[in-house]
Image (tube, rainbow, N blue to C red; front, side, top):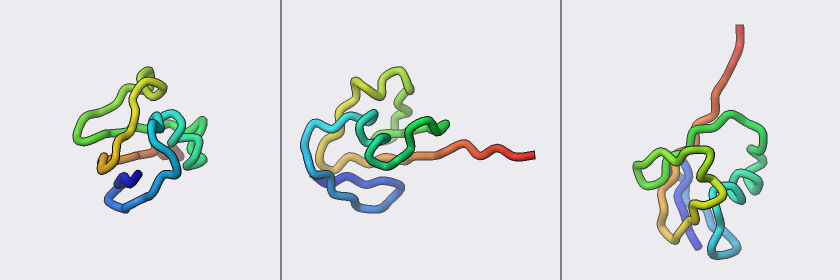
Length: 67
């Protein structure tokens, strides 16, 4: 399956991957993230329920803190 993450094509090894599983694969666990799938923001509470499909377009943004 192929998806786009921040405009870059990425191949996933399996079908029926959730956003939550993708976060683990990308080593983003524990990070403050905003994820948009095909133009719609996905609430963190739905990461386990939202499944990715071939051709999906994701935008992933991480919060940066400092002071």
